[in-house]
Image 1 (cartoon, helix red, strand yellow):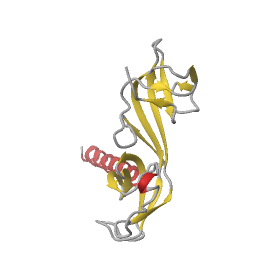
Image 2 (tube, one colour):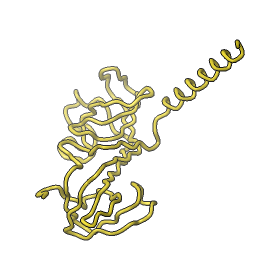
Image 3 (cartoon, one colour):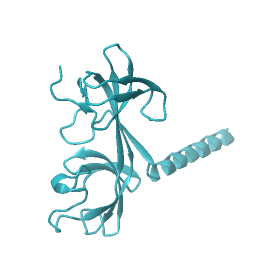
Length: 186
């Protein structure tokens, strides 16, 4: 009986150690589901195809090509995923709990300068003060130096995928890359 209890306790310690170790390493590729990358962004609705688009069996250009969608076609969005290879944000000035030299791994852009970031073994939201799309905030902090507390030294690589259904009922995944428009949905 004591052997069984000892064995069970040892297995639980091993499982806890292994699961804790896997959480301490940042994801190489982070897949954020049911999300649209950016402020005021929604993946739901019936976007219009702006340019010829390939539909894949999975959210991956290496998966099977299922069919093509022509320009002007309306599709129905079913789901969304954002796949991100992290950017590297290096802290230059003390800010909140961060110290100069700290590294924050930057993932999904949520809008208004806020990103999902990996720090100290966990994912959380953080306002970094810039947009990956450029604009007034640029791709790094270009505002008042007093509020520029870090710099993006390696850009993040985000790929947005949308699961769609066409008018014939066929489903699959398309890469969103200036090929869809949500204006004037019906």
